[in-house]
Every structure is written in structure tokens, then in C-alpha cells.
Image (cartoon, rainbow over all chains, first blue to last red; front, top):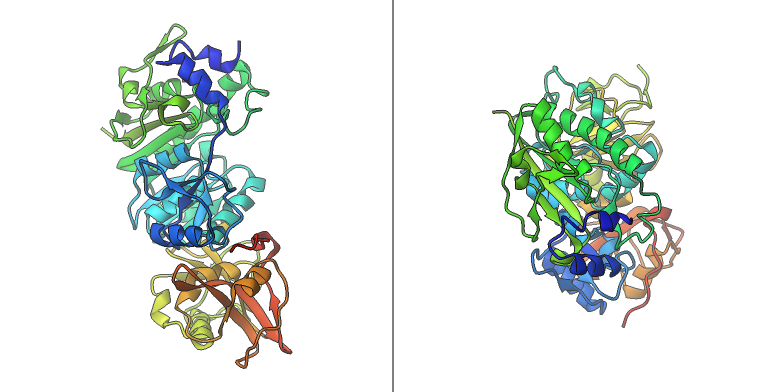
Length: 308
Length: 170
């Protein structure tokens, strides 16, 4: 059984799902509003004869049908960043504000981190953490190219993230975050259109072990968020073990609850049952995006409010 | 005290506050950008400046208690502790748009060659030293990076990771 066959019982239109998974994805870029406007980016692309189509759901997310995202002047200036269409969603759902204190738990290579910085108008304090030191250089490179100055880069295991290096408990230090993004490491089933070999390393054992990591990271994220603050949990995978089951676990163990959110991309509700296991009924507030819904990669996204 | 290359230390506000020998001050860093490129000093209100590694100054949009043991704090901004201070490519791209002097504007072909890392011999009768290299794009002049102008030659100091060979477009 391929990983995709595993989820056909969950999917509204299995034929469309299978067909979409077999189509490659177009190049997509996000306009970096720290350094440019949508108008200037489009003018520069036009001047160089580079075709670009705005997506129908966000003016700052452009499809480049004939071009790789990296060989043009807007890229050299850090005006655009290659970022898959659906991966623009979680930062928008988190909706960080200028001046906020924000933590991106699994930040490298930094597409969503730099998007968070842009949404914050490059003000306030944004912590980009990753446990992989090698991938931190990609995060730093991308952040600097995109002109981000509000980013603190840390190299910790997010499950045991310490605020001590951020001055916790001292004057001017960080004691809790307003908003946290947990874009968790996952089995990446939803990236099959971008990475045709994504299933080569897939195994149920891996799904189960990565789910343990995801639970640990989301729990720590909730603990490090101030009461009333927001955590967004996202993955690029379909496996309920890594999605609804992770939410169910954290709803049980931490003081938090799921909230509804408006999504500019179509999707369906989270599932309350999988292979004989039942999940907290509120997981229906989460969003499953299958590749055929918006002609993107697959995705999962949930919004968690901390306290009460 | 001496500089500890493993942690970020906030730059002292001015020379009277300096505790680490050779460390640039906030006032000197801002003054350098104002003198060299004509930026207004207010550009940097609200930012803090930090040193990690000898002479490597970072600009950070927020503040934290000093010292701080993290992997990165804002953006690498300026190389000090050498005779000629050197701005980073990323700092010039981020803050150089407001520059009013020591900016050299290249035509389309020269701009492409500069981004690819080539040294050029453009007409320039201004200062020697580090210049902001810019070109016109989308109805504005936009900084590409840093060039070192000496002996009638403009050397591209765009770091390898930021160089690109763009196809010529008509």
C-alpha cells in the first residue's frame, strides 16, 4: 500500500486526489514586503519579460510558470523568496503583529520565519529556532538576503526550549511569547508533488516516532506562550497520527483549546477518528488541505489558543 | 575586558561607556553610515548594535539583555576593527536605498557583471573605498551590494553566496 492509498478513505475525491498528486507544482514566490512592494516586483519581472501570475487568494504570492525563482533581479535584491503556495498559510493564520514577541520553533530554512518577520514589519522580536546546526546557516542566509533585522537565531531542541538565553527573568528579557509557530518536522507526504521521492523513506515506524517529537514540541510551545496567546500547528503531511492525534494529546495535557480560523485556501475539517482511535471533537476546527483542493501541496493547519 | 567571540555584546553607547578595548561604539557606527553614505542618523533609532566575533557588528531591531548567547541577532551590518570599515552586502541592500553619497549607479550590463562577481572599470571621480553599487530597476535606484573602488577599478565584494549570473534580457 502506498502512503496515498492509506488516506483514500479520508479524502472527498480520491481520483482527483491521486491525479493532483501526480502533477508537478509550478514555481511560486512570495513578495518580501520588508524590501519591496507587489507593484515594484511585478514591474521588475515585467521589465525582464518574466511571466508571473498572481494567485487568486493572495496578491503577494505569484506563480512563475516559466522560471525558476532564483535567476532574476528581484531575487538578487531579496524582493522575492521561493516558497510553495500552501506553505504561505500558517504564518497568515498565526497573524503576528508589529511589536509582538514570536517564536518559530522549527525555523530552518526560514521561508515561514521570514514571512513572519514581514508580517511584523520587521519589528518586535522573532526567535527562529532549529535543532539542526547545519540548517541554521540556510535560515541565516535567507533572513539576511530578505533584510530581516528582528530575528534572534537559536539552536535548541524545541521540546526543551529554554528562554534563559533570551534573558528570561531579567529586565528586558523574554518571559513568554505572544505567538508561536510550530511548523513541525513530519513525514512530508504532502510534498510528493515537489519531491517525487518523498515516499521512498516513508514508514509507519517513522510516522510514529516523528509524532512523538511533534507532541513534545507543541507542548513546549503552549507552555512558552502567554495566557491568551496563540500557537499555530502545521505539517505538510496527511497522517492523522501526526496531525489530529498530536492536537488531541496536547489538548489533554496542556491548558489550551482549538479555535476556528478563516482560511483563504480551501480545505476540509480535521478528522475525529482514525484506525479505531477517537480524537477530541474540537479537532474538526483544524484544516486539512489536499492537493486537489487548490492545486497545491498537501497541508495541515490548526490554531490553538492558550489558557482557559 | 577583552572581546569574547562566542557571545553577543551590545555596543557601548559612546566612548566613555567602552569597557572592551577596540570595540566600536553605537555613536561611531551610526556616524560612519551618516558620514560615508549620507543617511540620516534617525534611520537607526530603535535598533541596537552588537559585536560577536572580533569586529563583526550586527544590527538588531529589538533589544535583549547583554551579553546574549545565541546563534544570530538581527543582521550582520558592518566590519570594524580594521583600517577601513566595511558594510555588508545585506546591510547595504536593506538600508542603502536612502544613501545620498558614495553611491555608484551602473548600467544594465555592468550591473549584471557586478552581480556575477566581476571587477569593472567604471567612470567615477568620487572617493576611493567602499561604495554602494546600485542600478535602476522598477522606476527606482536600488542597491545591489558593496564595491571597493581603488586605482580606477571597482572590485565586486558581493559574497559568493549572493552572486548570480543572470541571463541578459532584452
